[in-house]
Length: 72
Image (cartoon, rainbow, N blue to C red; front, side):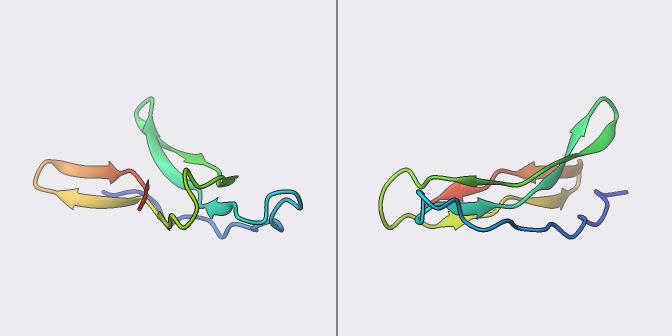
């Protein structure tokens, strides 16, 4: 069985002094033998013009694995 469906997140407004920050959505992580929700947060890009590609769960022959999000 894979991770549960994520809850609908309420995304707050971008923090005023940081208009270029992006929302990194929450996700379930595996911890202590169960899925635990890790909430989303605003994050600063490492360089101007970078785009955030969200992480995701992928089913493999060995079970479900989390693929981390990344900047590009």
